[in-house]
Length: 227
Image (tube, rainbow, N blue to C red; front, side, top):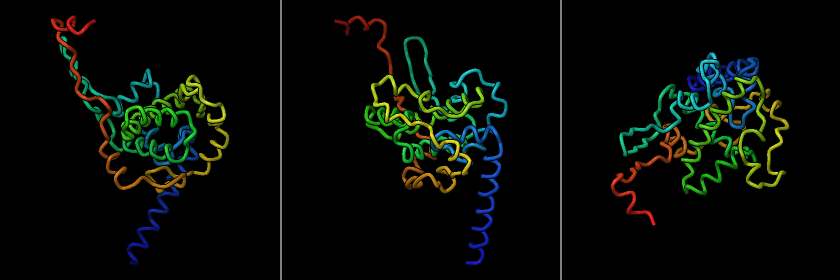
């Protein structure tokens, strides 16, 4: 029992040190304004990105962390594979956990609304979570590149979908939330309930995106299906 208590104290001290690093580093503080992103995700992501100028687009960052589907194509055959799982597995896992946290704690954020609509359309919540993690990675890159804080209205095309303006998160309090050092899903979240055991298992396996094997019809048979 004494050993457990000592270990708990050490973990608490490490958590406190992590929060201190995240809230005093300008880039970490900046990315923590994004829903679901806490100290652990911020420090890992910023450290992995290093020099943001290395990447030309958000898609390059998403691909760098293995959150995009692979492809094996030749001639008339297209074969989309699951996630490439390239790059840091730890950062990829944290981004997925950030997506779970955002879904639970920021239901009216445009990114979350977009993910929920995808979940309903695909009838698969896990695909939507991985897609949201990919979008979060792109948003974090944009914040580091532009030296700006998160602006919900620019994070999604939700406004073009005819949503009530009151549903669009105003962003008020994001700065205070970040400064508070609120935990994300990976470090005993104070933003909401932690993921369930099944969700943690699924997220840790970096679920493949909805990219099942597809084949285009051979050139000789394409015309037969028309009309």
